[in-house]
Length: 525
Image (tube, helix red, strand yellow):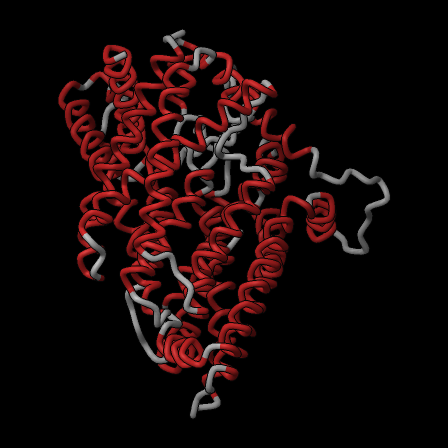
């Protein structure tokens, strides 16, 4: 099994190294300097290997510290409950949610496909060795930060050390259940395609995690000890069952082929994705439009693809509405929670930059536009003319803003209402600024992603991401939004600055799109 793991690690590292070299070749200035024989350059390969290993090391820790800081540590300030017990409470329920969303074993990655399907490596040895490696990374990645943040809020040392092992135990239990389910039904589902039951369970866990402390109910250390002991016992039992399972090849074939993620011929990738989305496309011949030209073409596209474009937004809106209802109930029954909510709302507006970034659907919608329209239409010369590109761009911008507006209206209105019900503010302009700034953020991300799509069009005909610059801009967007979480500013000053920035950015971006999109909006090779 160790030899198999070494082989798989080399395979993953080779794939990542080649991806790094390919990304360097996509950068505008560098690609003219670097030769076509780049992949044969030993020095550059060594450099890329070093970067690959550093990325692996960073990957072990970076996600864990962000997770604990954003999802747990920063949330402690919302509650009047004991911070040590609240830390344990949040981590427990979030671990339950994360256990069903991230199994590691059923995550369909390219290295799994290459190794098991194409190279015919022993699926059991490959799957188990990599699974154990992922679990070890969980322990190593979490341990320093559970100790660090745990010490800051007074969590006992034994719990700080126990928490990473608790996370592993829950993941083992979930994976054991998935194997049991596979034996019974002969069905294995990619973790990238969670079912409605899984999402419902996650929502319940989130509600219990963040809702119970609002009414002064948290898991104490004694309860956690009982849950931890049960989890460790069941985790060890699950580990034995997972290790003794024999049909890994059969299970992986189900995940890597039926999940519509990995394909055997490159050109079938688009077809597989299109087949998956066809079920949601409404091809009713009665669909018509009273518009003309580009607007007519786009209007029919939106009507026929309304499920793909709006399904997630409708779910988001229901969840947002439920959260605000729960918050209103909380501030009604708990005076401490009421005063804390008012205090938070007055200075936490920058935090909502990250929230609006997370819920904005523009990236997914532009991908759907490419997959279901542009990847075919861009092969026609007429579709690449400036008049057509700018005409469609204008219509799509209206649609994108409209799609993202519903959750933005609910959040903006909900925050203004919460501010009023939790004690209000002396400056009445704060209500309007709070509402308008959220709408401005929503419009900003709609414009940002559509302009990115048109200026950096990142996909090839197989809907594969082929633009390093697009990926870099996405990363920078995330970093800036994440940084906003750390900022505390009054509603008035930050809200005004946000509105002005969003308007200016949108105007500049739209100017660039209208000037350069006819040259940049094309299929990548």
